[in-house]
Length: 267
Length: 288
Image 1 (tube, helix red, strand yellow):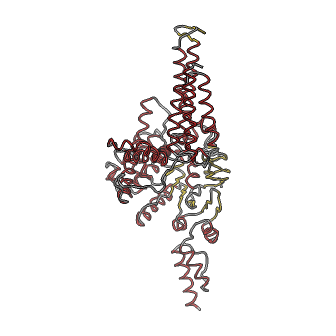
Image 2 (image 1 turned 30 degrees about the vertical axis):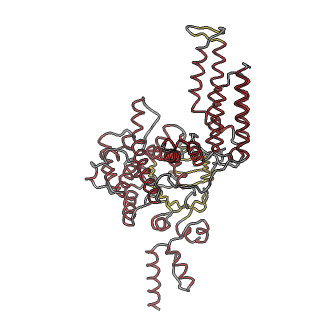
Image 3 (image 1 turned 135 degrees about the vertical axis):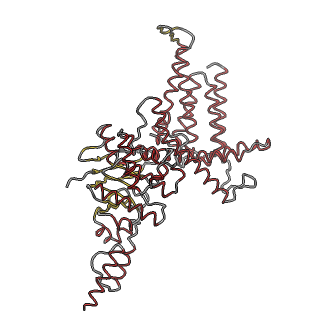
């Protein structure tokens, strides 16, 4: 059950997509999201779709893995689509009771569903192909200009990387505790809402305790190795942008520009 | 004799179809008989923990079956429930699963889930506490103010309180001092002796397995490499070492003594046997 959560999971590999600089990938995702929200025509979506499909093909991440990640979002996607379907304007296609389905509504519903699916898959591409350490390092570098404004960039990045690092550990821990309580006859999927909530207690209490214990141990271990924040800290592997990064970024900017132009001319 | 619990060609694959695919258990067929003490050994990552989680239906096999009294435990919701109460599973570091306000409440969690009467629950809590070596005056304390060893006992009592016919323990002695190990083992044995329950102890400590097991199953890379009496398993020292397992110290000593020409009688893998063997040797010499 819990092991199906793929959020923030990294699939190691050595494809071009994996080797791109994390900064490039983060910027590309931002550009991609901007493009998705700009696009309002079939042509625009098609371009974005081809970019996504190309990236997935290059990264050699299986489509089934990508689709599995979408599973928890099916409800949200359906809900937004249905709401959009019912609240559109334009030519009436069907009518029943107080609902009225219009061609505008159908269009909005389809585009909205596509937008969410492609948005999520695009961000998956980032987390699936970038290790959490690289991801936070990239973010830290991108945010480093904010240091001038006294924003604790290094500390934020460190907190983020530790949080990311602990997600799989905590999931594993939850799994273990659930198994242990199940072995004592606990059931988590029966009874009404209150009973179900009460059944969570045997999981939550040990989980919180272990999270605090882990945090405490980690802090001690870091202090024991003289960690004292980001001042004067250097990296073993320093990131440098390569030719492929410039190519990828140029392509990204071109695609975004193309979609803006398309919108401008209403194609 | 019919085994009480049996696994049939059990295979378990984690994350099939992803880069993380891993076959943790491969085609394992193991029988567990009433009243026996079975030692399951294997080095880290040999599939021990995955294997035992199948025994009470916590994990579904990718292929193969688990039979309790000859019936598939995954047959229905009811059979899964039955397996959970008849096969008790104590996880590694079980003290981390304690959650109740008092020791008494925590131990009664299992019996309460079995929907037993209040009197029966109370009786079982006392009995389980006794078996696991939890003093009665601790019952109304919070489990979180106990020492590590005491917590471990409370957690074991929580499983014993379900009165399982098969008690499976995953590394029950991990991280305890020698005295704690010895006394917890004694407690487990006392449960075995007075209820006739089958005990399955998962360990990587050959000494422990040697001392108590009637039979041993050795796992290597998810497959059953050996399933035999301790004598036989320990007579295959080189194979064990090839799997990254150590033989008991006394086996090594006996091997070296024999190489030096000392004619030790019988198989020797515990200190007691070594003492007996040396005494026998000495007696033979003084007679001659």
